[in-house]
Length: 216
Image 1 (cartoon, rainbow, N blue to C red):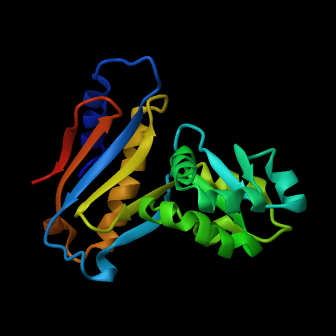
Image 2 (image 1 turned 90 degrees about the vertical axis):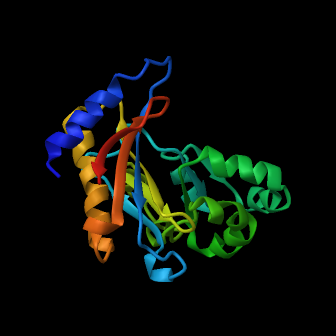
């Protein structure tokens, strides 16, 4: 599909009622003829958008010592080992933390405790740290957070629908279209027969109607 078709759909999505808050662009790709009981067909990965997210990301760092001090300049919250232990015993607050942050970065020697304390609430949300988000005590939190500003998480496990954040209303239509194409290209390389397996593609703003931009 030509990029022009994506741009046209994005323009239509922008016609949604204006809101008092900034809205995001969200993509939904519906698949068919795919067996999600097979592990190889499930999706749980991160993708770097060519034009970034268009807005900041919220990051929590689980660290202590010198790394915690350095991280405080670049992340929204630093969680100490003691605080982590408390979250492990307070499921309500753990769920609140899970919904509050886009990404979690963990000091490598705290990963086991992190998985035990927050894993049960982050796992189902697809927010467990990827390898690049697990860093040594002497690691560079600034570089990690900078890299996360262009990343989105892609998950598809139980239902054949992939939802993805593809941009922010402050970005121009062409940049958002190229972000969408990055997601679609990822799927086309992932699927065995994308022409028949991609059923439909929709894009919408946070509070707007879904605009169909692809599929049969």
